[in-house]
Structure formats: C-alpha cells, structure tokens
Amino acid sequence: DEPSKSNDEQPNNGETIELEFWLVGTEEDMHYKAIPAVVDQFNADNPGIKVNVVVGGGENDYNKKIALMADSNSLPDFFELGSVRAEGFLEGGVVTEITDYIDQDSEWSSYKVIEGAYDNMYKNQGGEHKVGVAINSSAAGWFFNKTMFEEQGLEIPQTWDELLTAVKKFKEAGITPIAHGASDLWSIWGYFPMYNQYGITELGADIKGGNKTFSETMIGPYNRVKELADAGAYPQNCSAMTYAQALAMFTEGESPIITTGSWEAPNFAAMEDEVVFGWGFTDMPDTNYEQNVGLKGVDWFVYAGSSLKQSDAKLEAGLKFLKYLCSPEANKILLENGFTFPAYEVADMESIEMDAITKSLYEKISDDTQMVDYASSYVDGNINDAMTNTVSSVISGAITPEEAVQQLDDSLKLLQ
Image (cartoon, rainbow, N blue to C red):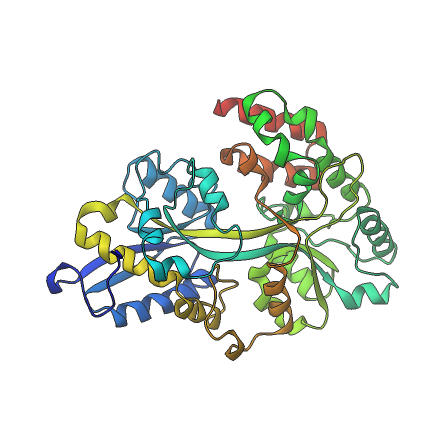
C-alpha cells in the first residue's frame, strides 16, 4: 500500500488541515520568491490542506531560531535547513522520519534527484534516515570576469600557481584581484574544498576522535589564504566590507574574481558572455590528496518536524505536501520562479528559458568533479562558525594560519 493519497482524496474527513512551513531568508531572497509559488499551487490542488509560509529571516538569525525551537521540541511542521545544522535531530526526537513512506510509494521513489542528494542527511542523522526532502542543489566556487582576464593577456586560472600569477598581474595593473567582504564571515564558499584538498575527507574522523588535530593536519588551507593576502589579492578595507559590497565590485567590473554560488546566477545574467565558473584550483602545494573537488550538492532540505505525528490525518497531509515538493511539476515551478537550482528533476526542461550562465551552472552540478560538503561536516557541524571566522580572519590579517588552526582545536575541545 502506498501511504500518499491522490489529490482528490483529502485527509481528515473534509476538514482543512493547516501546516506551517518556515523558509530561510527575507521576502527578497530566492527561497521566498520561488517556494511560495509551489505552495500556492499545492494549496489550490488540495482544498483540504493549507500550507502557510513563514519568512524566517536571514540565515544567521534563522539558524538560531531553528536551533532554539529544536531544543524545546517546538519546530514547525516543515522547515528549511542545511544538513549540518540538523545533525542529530532524529536522535533528539524533534523530526519525523519519512524513509519508509518514500520507499513504499512507487511514484515518489521514482522521482529523480541529483546524485548523492541525501548523503549528507544520512551522515548527520546516524544512518540512511530521511527526515525531510532535498530542495535546493547548488554549485559554489569561483566566478571570473573573462573580459578582464583577456585584457591582461591571462587565461582563467585552473591551478594554484596560475591563480597567484593572475593575482600578481592584476595587482600590478592597479586592479583588486579578488572581491571579498570579510565582515560577512560566511562568504568563503570557494575555500571549503581546500580543506578536502588537504585531506579533511579522510582525516575528519581522526580529528573528531582526538587522534589528530587541526594544527597537525589543516594548516595548508590557511597558508594558501595567507599567500593570497600577502600577494595583495583582497581589497585593503576588506575587513569592513560586506559580501554585498564585494559582489558589487565584481558585477561592476572593478574586480575579476569572486567566490560565491549558483544562487547569484540571476545577478550575473546580464554578464553572461563575461562570466566563467570554476570549482577551485588544483595542484595545491604540500598535499597528495584528491584535487578535483567541488562544493556541490544539496544545500537545503525541507525537514519534517515531529509535530506531523500529532495525528494520522496531519501526517498524511504532510506526506502529501513533501511528495509534491519532489515532483517534476513542483520543481518546474521552482525553476520558472528563479530557484537555482531544484534538487529534483524538472518537468519539460526545454520549455524554460535560461541565460547562458544559469545553464552552464546547472550542467556543472552533474560533471565528474568529486562532490564535497562544507568542511566542518567531516568533523563536527558545530565548528562551522569557527571555520568561517578563522578563514575570514586570515584573509583580513587579524590572525595567522597557526592561530587559526589552534582556534579550531580549541573550538572542538569545547564541544567534547
């Protein structure tokens, strides 16, 4: 028996069941602009169910709100969250496992999702447990202004040495090479794969278990960041700059390089003939670990709160909505409304108009680059803030690489 009923079979004997769905961001963000369109269509097709959207606020504040609700087991029926932030939620009893419902529904389980979409959820919930559905896939790395590189007689850098050469050339020309706003500590996406290039994928468990330390194993990424800083890669006032200001430097042609992700594709659409994307830079010094890695995969899931189990009717309604989020029809609505990018297959992809940069990013998600997660997930998701703080602090010159890795060791000890 399949647990989800068709749309014309409403649960709860005709009474309307209301469900609360929290989204990350503000009304100007991609999530809020796109997901409510899917919710509106679901509500129209299911008169016995009403999903109400709540705008949860900017990512930092939002994550704090969700953490507080998780501590008191008062999470909403559905909520967006990254897998690292939801570590252990199933064990804590604050979410509803839906693995069997998906597996036993032949239509739901047939919906195509990007490769490895649920790996991070499994890792952070102690096994192959689904406690929500994948919603947002992305590509995060480095964007380059091809025209600015051509004007300096440079190719888009593929290796670390090529990047340093480009930085030197732009600096000599009086151009700030890398647009970066270090006051927004989280804007370091392109740096996370560097930890993998220095072995955190393999060494993370030993670091977490106390057999190794960050100081012993992870100074490499910080040395590379300092190389860039010493070469003058960043704006002189980057410690006071925001991500938005750095983004403006790039889009206005004042700087040729920035690290960000596919969510900025709409902002780059007007520059589509100039913008090139890359995962990162290979041939890092002093390491023998895999170099062809990229920060791609699922950033956000829609989790099912434990409140769905309040009644059979509520659970049935909730499952119907989660199934709809995975459907090709729903994901087409997401893409048509500027969602970059749905984790599940989109219906009738050819009918959707996309600019060149968006198409290229969509294709990148399926290339042969090894998918990696945020570096903290290989050790303990709770040190993610310490990682972003230390990278940004080395960029701005506030701390040394040696101090950075020591801060990570200290942060991990506080969690043990």
